[in-house]
View 1 (cartoon, helix red, strand yellow):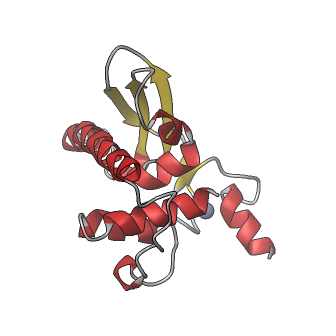
View 2: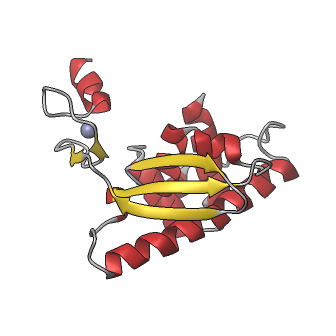
Length: 159
Ligand SMILES: [Zn+2]
C-alpha cells in the first residue's frame, strides 16, 4: 500500500521537479530512472485535483523542511539530508496530515532519517541530527539490529 502511493506520487512529481523526484526514487531503492517509468495509470484514486493539491501541499512542507535542514547544514550540525531528524508541527485540519503521520512514507518523501508529527496552531518544523547510526548496506540512518544492519536490509539479506 505504502509503496503504491509512493510510486504514484513520485511519478506524478517527476515532470514537475525532476531532481527531487529522481533523488527520492533512487533513495527508495527503485530500479532505473523515474523518468523511464510510465506515468501512473489514470487511476481515479490519484489523478484527481485532490491528489494534485496534496502533492502541492507536500511540496510546500518539503520546502519548509528543506530550509530548516539547510540551516543546520550551514551551521555544520550535520552534513546530509538523510541525517536529519524532523519534528513537524501541523494544524489539525492539515490536508496531508495523514500522509505525514505515515513515517515510512514521510521519511522517503523528504529523504530524512526520522520524522514525527505533532499538532499545533500552524505549520512549523524543528530539525536536529538523528541519533541513529548509518546502515552500512543502504546508507540510511536507521535503528541498527545486532547484525549491524537496519531492519529492511536484514530482511533483504534473508531472502
Ligand atoms: Zn539498511
